[in-house]
Length: 286
Image (cartoon, rainbow, N blue to C red; front, side, top):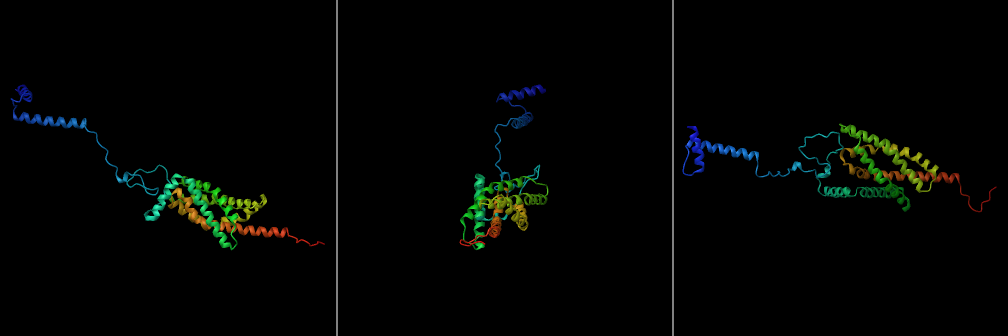
């Protein structure tokens, strides 16, 4: 009996004139629907379109912005400063966006320009405080020294940012401050005062004397300013802006170095005049 029902069902599917019993037709429709759903899951006809990117999947707009929702942890501690207040200010934010684009295109050119501006302002301020007539050659010496030191100083801060990164941010910042104060400060101050003496025509003995008399005093006074500036820089400032941020405080520091160098020049001039007195013409020695 069952084979006859199957034959009638198959034949009714081909012939519109014969109809199978109602129960067999219902089961046939259900089986057809199940086969159709299985085939659509195994062999999709239309390719799936990728979902649009969410706001959390987009890259950060700046170096200090980190995408929300990330769960992966970095393998090594990274040099990531905290977000600063200027990201929420209109004109200031626009300036930093423009500066960031220019910095990304020409980093060395930007650093050279900011360093020369810093040295120029520092020297003009020092000459104004000294009460002497303006000396353009003194300004030219300062710009020469600053132009030579611009790129090495920028690379030094990038080096500190890439190294000495620990799991504790306090330990990282403290180590970078100590390394900067122990290595960069004596080297830079020796270079600064040595170049000042060299550009004014001093011999090797005069250059060494200038370094010995000025570097210890400048290093002692640098402890009053630069550890705090360096710690704030590595905690809150992006790596490529740290040398420029230090340049803001370097205006006053360069003013102090220029004033200290000029003071030492006057002392050396007095010593030379005492050791080599000028005898007026017409004076007869006995």
